[in-house]
Length: 72
Image (cartoon, rainbow, N blue to C red; front, side, top):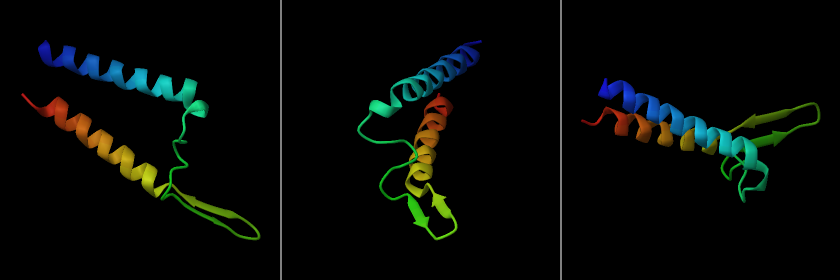
């Protein structure tokens, strides 16, 4: 039961952070999805956007979260 409790706390914390970012995201000094290092190429007939730095940041945060949950 202790593992289930920790999992529920972690899910709640993630939902809290996501809710905060959705609510106050426009007021933050940086834009999630528009970080320096993201690739943006504008052409005549289209736009190519690849959020490289955003993906790296999300991967690092998720790896840290999984590592913290996996410790015993």
